[in-house]
Image (cartoon, rainbow, N blue to C red; front, side, top):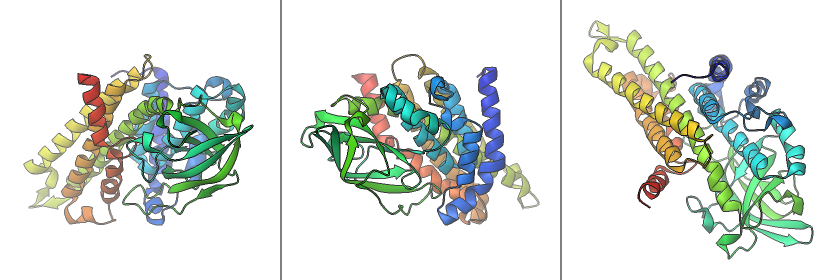
Length: 375
């Protein structure tokens, strides 16, 4: 696939940044479960925190393929960083697409510069794959809305400052889901303790509880009842981003496995000369390239009008499942060393699993694909 000069320049800039600044922090971030804030400031310096902000508010407003390329390259360095950025950009997308002029003016210029950091609050303890079951309520009282409820799996939950929240204006009516923008320092917003996770440990993931949190009515982003359709629209682009991250993670594992196989000797030869290892690497490369092309295809469709639900779900399904398979094989090629923290494939293997879960599980992606194909 050919890229424009601008796309190639942005990709190369992010690739170099990921190699020099992001990847070296990955092990410490994973071990200490802390996000590398200096890396975030670097992302702001090269402009990618502004990817989904319109130009008139200081953003880049990149096309879908550029967005995918940035996610791929960052995830090659560290998935936790790529995930944090994609959520931030999901929030700026919501404000840009659904917000009015005062909302855009208030939030977007600063967010384009990297801070405040965005959080996306859709899932709940009892409402994950089916957001219509959410119980968080935003009750109108005069010129304010009062929010009550709990959101779960919030990326940037501790370090973030601005939250896009989905809530029902009538808790008993699933047709009343509405989208709001909520500054996290609002009275009544409580941040839970970080989740202890299998992987993606450098990314803070918390609950957010709203206990009588009052926000001005002008912080409502969508008309009452239009929030769920807005969420599904935005998540289509989000799934392309996750697909790209899965591709970048898989490629990183291939690079590690190839380097190890070339260097490691058994039976008086590099294990890269053993046919079994060669075939593993061939399959890993083939599957990753197939996932990459599906992702690029879906990314290009993002700019063609209606959100490409089937293409995005196909890309996310194939890429995430490929990432789990490829990182597994990378560990296997490393043998016993792959099971230790001495080599990064162990972390990649743990990180890969989340790509099959967040932004819609693999089962949900199959449901979307079948619906688009058959119904």
